[in-house]
Amino acid sequence: MHWWQRAVLYQIYPRSFQDSNGDGVGDLPGIVRRLPYLAELGVDALWLSPIFVSPMADFGYDISDYTAIDPLFGSMRDFDALLDAAHAQGLKVLLDFVPNHTSDQHPWFVESRASRQSAKRDWYIWRNGAPNGGPPNNWLSEFGGSAWQFDAATDQYYYHAFLAAQPDLNWRNPQVRDAMHDTMRFWLRRGVDGFRVDVIWHLIKDEAFRDNPPNPDFRDGEMPYRRLLPLYSTDRPEVHDIIQGLRAVIDEFPERLLIGEVYLPVERLAAYYGRDLSGAHLPFNFSLLETPWQARAIAALIDRYEAALPDGAWPNWVLGNHDRPRLASRVGDAQMAVAAMLLLTLRGTPTLYYGDEIGMRQAAIAPGQVRDPWEKNVPGFGAGRDGCRTPMQWDGGAHAGFSVAEPWLPVSDDFAACNVARESADPSSLLNLYRRLIALRRTRVALSQGDYRPLAAACDILAYERVVAGDRVLVVLNLGPQPIVYRVPAGTTAENLLISTDSGRDGQKVADSIALRGHEGVVIELCV
Ligand code: TEU
Image 1 (cartoon, rainbow, N blue to C red):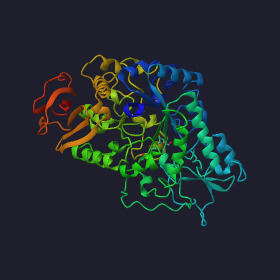
Image 2 (spheres, protein in one colour; image 1 turned 90 degrees about the vertical axis):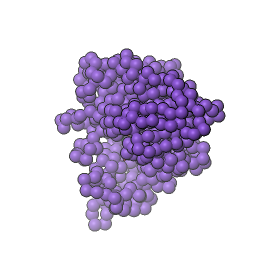
Image 3 (cartoon, rainbow, N blue to C red; image 1 turned 60 degrees about the vertical axis):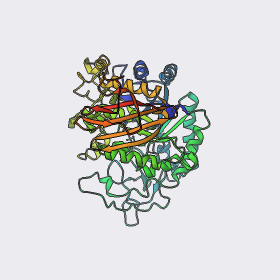
Image 4 (cartoon, rainbow, N blue to C red; image 1 turned 90 degrees about the horizontal axis):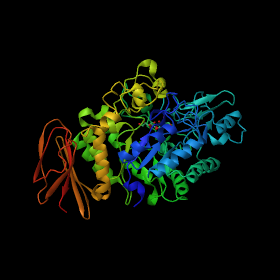
């Protein structure tokens, strides 16, 4: 087994984790200071959202130098110190690799836009306008409006899937591929343990630039980008060759991990493992972010995902990230513990988003405090991502212990009750449940490696087994407020209750049925 199959991954949004120099923005020395917290939580690897030199139009997802640290976060020396300190505590470090687009301030793009004859012209996607005027085709930017930006100086348009300040690279150009492969090698040689690759399903666009068809499911009031199906601008068959190229670079180094960010239905996602598993090790599975929080819907999703996985492909699950509303606000306070138990008992590598382990909620952002360019470009559709990016709540002191200065985004107003210091001291807190679940996952092979066997999905009950030679556990989750009694399947003998979301029950003997309170989840040891 590879380390990442047994691992629990933890996403840090560096701007918001820990400020060490009093500028209100988190930084690398801040992360170093908090490594003991992460080691105690029990996670195995950190993924850092981008820390590279950037004008910050999209908070680091617009990179102008791939091989230098933005001074806002620290220096290369700080990065090396973080890598060493993390490794010394047994934590792997994954970086965010953003190969689809650069910043418009990147020297490559500056050179590319300088003239049609520029040696780097073809590094980006330049097209003439349509014969009757206007952009080359109907493609839309995810962040609002046409995906084509007119450049008066050279009388052509360039393509940007996101902001106009994030021009897309042309991955059909071998020089682009070589340059980007070299940036990967730069970090791999320094010792990073792998990458999370940004919008990997966007990397190649249709060679003929055909118009995207209308989306028959589009409803008024939805995000304008949803008006068309991105058939020709994303998820093209050729993307898998590009990903194979990234994977080949990863495989030049021992035991490195390639994760791909892919927002696609699980049936399409499966292809991102690549032919003969030569693609991403873990194409991120975001399907829980989009599924109604109901037992039947979740059980059906797990079945679809398990069925779609290619032979030998390793699954993974995500409950939150820096682009989506906070878990606590999606499933409701009462279900946070059950959600934690689901994530940490499903088959495959789980990824936690910073702050979800203490139950941070989507913060209210006043109109004057909006920082997210997506929200600014397309206001009123609920696109705003600031509310899930607020400072980590370490304690009940000034600015929640995140910084001595006013933070770049406001601290959520629940920080006096919801913070690490308080929850650490409370055995029944969500944080301590996460710690117990992660520790259990480490000791029970059934949880880290066992097969998944669905048992029940009715009303509010979701039950399944995890089974491996010599170890077998039963997970029962109550997704509703009513108490219920769950009967252990016929022919099965239950032993101890290993963990309940209601602390205090751990270790209880279980007979042939178990009574669960509303919103309770349990993991039970079964006789093998
Ligand atoms: O996100 C892409 C992203 O989340 C959306 O564009 C996604 O396609 C949509 O929600 C699908 O429904 C990545 C980064 O995570 C994000 O922070 C960046 O802003 C974006 O790419 C551009 O780099």
